[in-house]
Image (cartoon, rainbow, N blue to C red; front, side):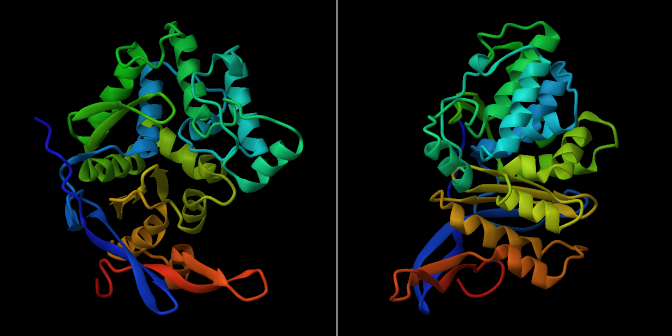
Length: 332
């Protein structure tokens, strides 16, 4: 019987006008450069669904199965939770076109862009939700392209028993060092694999520390070369990869975050209530525990900023508080 995730401890608190009004519980694991746990809180050994933090491993599985890309950027968009900005749509379309496919082959749900500006532009033009705009369309395009390259069926590419999905599962198990504890269905319809936060951190460490030119390293290098494809112009993954040299980052729905720095270590975070607003300050606080990280505190402080807004009496808003990490710093 699969051991159920037991939940964690207080990781962050929401402060408004000097008053703590909410707290977020969760779990964090920090691995050092040798892969050993150097710090942790909560349940880091029971399986969780990492959601889109799975994507880089699934891209490795696609490469193992025969994915043939025309540009390393295709590996970045295949691992992305993109925001539907025009350059995202163009990259997904190019990946499909390279495989002589169209957006009609995608089996992800239709959606509007998650980027505010892109969504407003679509609505202003009278546009509708489409599969191409859905934030997982890059992953689906990479899966379909793999099927074309490997001569595999297209219609059943989301079936967990499909050869591509079996390759993805094998890649997840190899990189995490764990057997998949459960198989679910992700929000985009693709198979989703459960494993521990420790396994997630281990996988990201192996992605960045893999030999140059290897498939895991190709995925990590592609994502770090084009962080804008991974989470858009304003996404946290984009900003942290741009700010910290060599760092690989990927978030997942329901408040999951994984990061790794080659030769330094890796972190995996899960906020129990799915509150994404806590992920940023907790991840940056955990980064400070990594031995050998060479990043100015001001950079980390800027990235960790998660303001709480309030009315200012003129119809606008002003910052009246923050979501702040209380682990491993401060008092819970």
